[in-house]
Length: 381
Image (tube, rainbow, N blue to C red; front, side):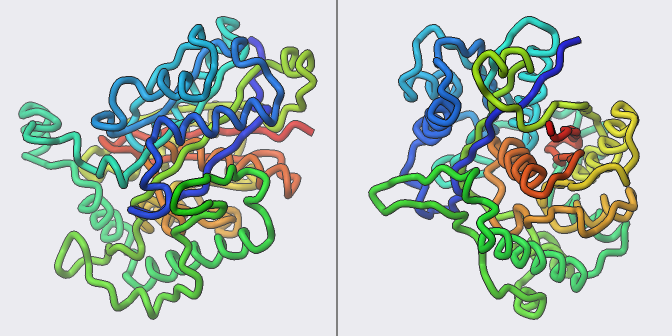
C-alpha cells in the first residue's frame, strides 16, 4: 500500500464568537485556506482530485455542500469536486482520514482535507430547529437520554474524581501554554491572516492572558447547580478554518514538495453515548495497537479540550506524560470551531513536531454521539 504524506498544513486564526471573523462567510473563510495551500505549494488546483471538508452544522450559511462552494469561491476550476463531512467535532479529522485512505489505496493522488465552522453565524444547536434529534428509539434505548455533552462532562468529572480546582487549574494552564507558544512564534508559520472590514486578524482571538484558577473559581456552573463545568473550563464557541494537502511521496517529489509528516495510522471507535466524551480513551488504545507503538513512543498529543475533564480523564487512563499533552494549549484557550477543529489540531501538531523534532504525534477528538477518531502521524526527516 502506498504512503500518504502531508505536504502543507495551514489554518486561519481562531476567532471568538461574534468577534473579528463573524462577518466572514464560512465558504469564503474556507476559500482563504484553500488559496493559501496553492500559494505555499505552487500546485495547480486543477490537479486536486477531491476536497474533503468538515462542517458540523450544515444549515443556513453552511448548507449546500460548503466544500464544493469553497472550491468555487477560491477560484479553482469547476472540475475540482468537494464533499462535506460530518462526524460531529471530529469532522475534519475524519476528512483527513478519508484523504489519506484515498491516496493510500491508489484511487487518488492529490487531496485536500480540512474544515470550517462559523459558530457566530450558525449557532451551536441551530440544526435542531423544531425537530426531534436522535429519534425516539435511540432515546428509549438509553432511558430517554438527551445525549448532552455538558452533562457528560459532569459525569466524567464525577467518575474520575476531578475536582473543580483541578479542572480550573488545567484550564488556566491551557491559556498559559497558548500564550507561551504565541509569544515564541510557534503559530506564525501555520496561520493565514484574515482581512475583514473590522480589521486584520492574525492571531487566535480567544486567548485570555493572566487567566488563573482563582479567577475561574468565580464562574457559575453551566449544567448543574452544584456542578464543576463552566464557561471557563470548557471550549470556547468560535469561528475558523484549516486545510492540509495530502499526497504520495512520489507525487510530492515530482512537485518539488517536502513532506512534513507521514500518515502512520488511524482509528475510529464508538463509546458510551450518554457520557459522550470518553471515546478518545479507547480510540487511543486502538490506534496505538494498529500502529505497533506504545504511549511512551508518542512525543506530543493533541486531545481536544472540549471540556477540561476530557483530557484529564484521558491522561489518567493512558498514563501519558502530562508535559506532552496539548503542549501549545488547546480549545479552552482559543476555541473549538467544530468542523474545523480536527484540521486545526492536526495543523498545530504537525508544526509543533517539525519545530521540536518529534518523531510521532497522536491526535484524538471526542465527538457527539460517543464516537472518537485517533490519528498517529510520523515526522518525515
